[in-house]
Length: 331
Image (tube, rainbow, N blue to C red; front, side, top):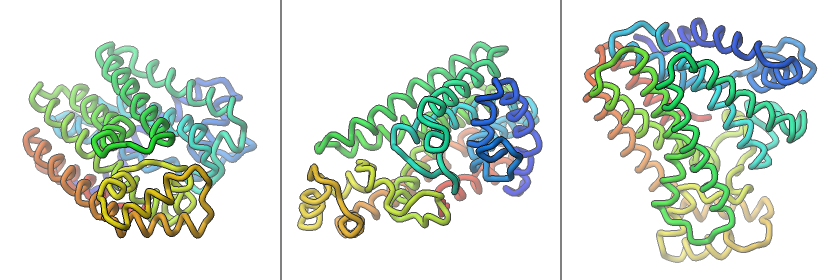
């Protein structure tokens, strides 16, 4: 099963259902959400922008296929997961003060903070409505949202702290990202009628893959190419984030670590040259290498769980390929 075919299936089966769900929103919010997804411009005119990577719905549909069902059985679950993911993005951009996403202005910057918050709220409510016919699935999704909120709250609190540990930083990665990938795989396997052991193994696969995904995101947040990520260079450092590479470098000890702490933890804002120096110090102190090694370890753990799920062979290879795509991406 080719990965390109998988994403074509996501486009053919999930995206139309996603757009149909969004069409239920009031016109004022619907156009804002359409702008966020790249379906229209700021004036509501049709556009063909990027609607995101669609990694989570791909995992949901593949997890259903992995346990022997057609992806159609998990389409509503995939829609709900994608709606929750974008709810989190809309609110994250407000909290982070991010000006760009997917190579265009963020919703809050284009339409204002109140509108962005309301649009995010609408997507969360819509996700629950989509899954309402399956009460157990609603509980699973709500549990993921609760953990996602916890992860985001940790991320925000870290900006005001100088004593963040690696354990806490990894917990934040789990909450912000891994919990929703775990949920995507669990819902796909459940909707596909998987056996309890398969559901549990795919759930664990999604969790470890999600941690790896966030670690790669942390690396891209410092060293990613803006042309690929759609975000400014050194974005996470500019925002004062305590992401895993930064925390690993601060915890490493030695001269580079001490210089990093003296510069990055001071209360005064950093200029562009100082931000570049911080990135160099994070790398020299070993933070970049540590995060990459941990991402690789998490991928190995994910693939071990995937094997335990005993998926259909063609789907197994597609999920292995998707894991590689997620952890070796440029943006």
